[in-house]
Amino acid sequence: MAKEKKTNAMRMLERAKVPYQEYTYECEDFKDGISSTKELGLPLEGSFKTLVAIGKSGQHYVLVIPVAEEVDFKKAAKAVGEKSIELIHVKDLTPLTGYVRGGCSPIGMKKQFPTVIHESAQQFDTILISGGRIGLSLSLSPADLLKVTRGSFADLIQHLG
Image (cartoon, rainbow, N blue to C red; front, side, top):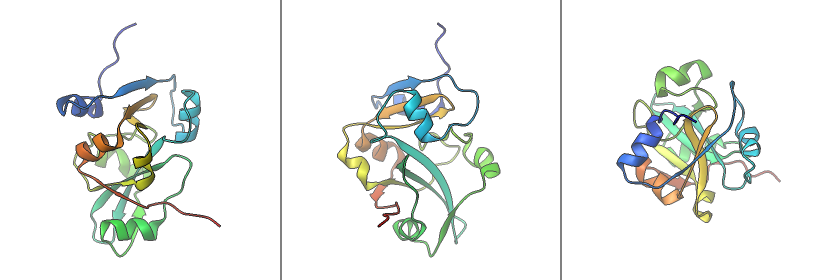
C-alpha cells in the first residue's frame, strides 16, 4: 500500500519531534467525531474534536473538546478573554484554516490561533484528534498537543443536570 501523503499536522509534529500514532479509516465525506472514533474501534473517552470560533473582537480561536460534548460559549469566552464567542460558519472553515469540516486539526492551520484544550484531556496519557484530513486521526499526549499549539487548558463544555 502506498504511503499516504502527510498532512500539515503530521509535518508540524515531526518538526517538533513529537511522537504520534496515526489511525486511518475509509471515508469520503464528513463524519462527526463520535462516528469516526467508533469507525476506528477506539473509546470515545480521550477522543477530541476541533472547533473554530470567533470572538466579539474578531479574533479567531481553536477549541479542542471531547467528541461527545458541546461547547459552553460563556466558559469558552471567559477562557480566551472575550465578552462573547461563537463558532464560525462551515463555509469559512477551509479558507481560514486550510482544513475541511471533519478533517480540521488543531495543529498546522494556515495561521496559528489561540488554542484552548478542554481540561479533561489532562487525565489521559494520549488523546485522539483529527489528523488534518477526513479519515485520519492522530493520537498524542495532551502535553505535546499543548506544546505544539502553544495552547492552554480550561473548562469549555456544558455540564448538564
